[in-house]
Length: 98
Length: 137
Length: 120
Image 1 (cartoon, rainbow over the protein chains, first blue to last red):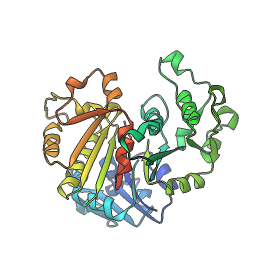
Image 2 (image 1 turned 135 degrees about the horizontal axis):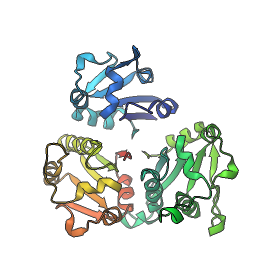
Image 3 (image 1 turned 90 degrees about the horizontal axis):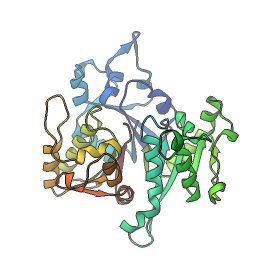
């Protein structure tokens, strides 16, 4: 299964995400989930950034919260809504929202 | 003729939000979906309770008495009465100190024959893999 | 091109999850896909007509009208959820349908992709 997981919040996401197993796991940060890509709590990057080599962040939600693309972790790919449509249709069989 | 399998994965606690209630009412709606489909086509739901969501499965819920609303217990029993496949995560039960005796495992009191299954998360993950679409609540 | 079914349960005002759903649907339509949207629970408020746009609240009605006009978008609200919140068929925005929950499941039957946004 190719599973895309839309992470929509900053807290209480790790427990669900860590348990999900897939042949290809993608993590898409939106809404308050974008804080995982650009903040360092206690000087450390979010552990969610270690969950998958396939990570995306919605630029609109990032910019809305005061960040720019240069501030995000280099492993995360910035995407627009249009890009996200392609990710959902082409890169994953199922996409869930947590 | 085709069957589309939908996974209703419940991770939310009951009552404070509508999420787990809507998971079960939508899953139960699979019983009448045929009116929109071609003959022989169907939607097959499977419901899995994970994380805090396992607390939806506790017995002796008095929501009708206290809030005047149907309890999640009743919705779960209705799901079992309709022979829906229901899985409850074993690891999360243990984490929350719940025994099988504390949970709704059947709907015998309303004539149901199907039982809920306590399953390790790995089995629930396999079930998710086998679905066409996943809906997290 | 494919079909995307989006189910949303989030409030119209507050979480911005409905905004996300509408913007994603709009982007999918613009790429040539067909989109079905199902709103249930608190999200049924999206289907209520007469929403007034203020700058402190989400205002999605104009965008929805554009999406309906595309011919590639249909949207349905949970009838029981709407009635429970005190708005009726005559209060429903033009373009919207109201059905029971089985409509959503039927839409997923023929969908290539389903995104269910279950948060409050």
